Length: 80
Image (tube, rainbow, N blue to C red; front, top):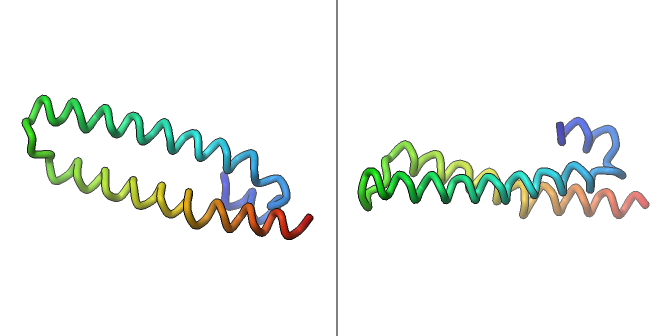
């Protein structure tokens, strides 16, 4: 949803970007809850699959929150 929006209507991208930032925050909360449950069930050692998902998801969220979104908002503000 976001990439077509950025290409076609970058001047209004703040709304979907904010929505995705809220989704990222929710996702991190869910991931933390899954991590806590897995630790209780499996002990201190997290499964390699869970560790991989967690790392990949955190990298994705970091890239969008700290690179893509700021750049999109910068382009948006420069067009005004």
